[in-house]
Image (cartoon, rainbow, N blue to C red; front, side):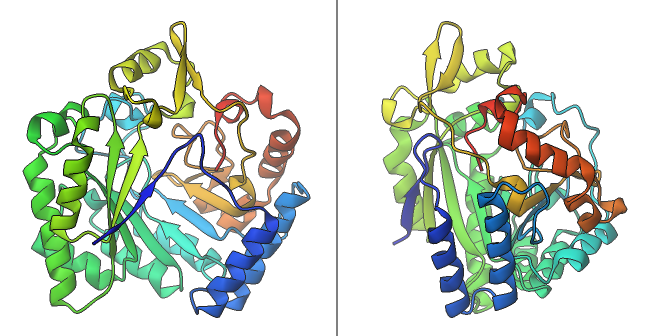
Length: 355
């Protein structure tokens, strides 16, 4: 029986400094992270606490976008809507390896996905194996369409730690309303292949999460989703309310499109309606921690502070410049200082719920 997490963007709790210390020591005690990695994370969190513009530690979470190409056309995703504003790109394997070579000693987690379908990159298994070999826990998010016996076996053998797969409907008509161009039966077959290959190879990983975005047209299928996840043998169910990227907060077309998908149940609503616009239900947004602990690398090699900058508006440099040189360069230090002092004047950050 899989466990279940319900994520709410407006209610999710974040650990304070003491909680992060306990969590880091717990990871070290359980053998999940070396003492070097835990101490480095502590330096990052101290820098956050003191709002230092120059971070004392190195990033310990890395999100790398292998590609911004996708086979689906999800209506609230910048890639799916065709509004990403970046040419389709595939990150060269050598640049990926350069990132890991520079940061590997302190990385705790690497997520090899972002605004695209990672399994469309031919070198994905090699990327995962590279990050895993450096001692990091590796995860990806996928729509599941490229999973078959061969690709599933490659993922298991690569050392992938976790995969979360979108399951936003329990029949073709419901599924494809949001996952446009998607095929429900293909995703089910792919999940079966992945779990079968994991079992055949005698592995415990990847940990398999099935994610259900709650929307107006599918919220009545929530119990059916739970039943299917149990039947397939997934390790965890994730229930998450639908939202849209904060980078599109002031875009009327995105705001209008969201109205079609906003759940009817208040339990799963993260926004409230104000006239023609949507606003967060919560009264106050959490302070963002991402620029003090993590980096996001886009498929063209651009380095941005977090995943909520899909168009590279806040590009701090490029991997080709050297990741560590970018981490504390003048532009990144100025960004952290502005976030700490003038968040309300920053177009994306002023409406972000915080990372």
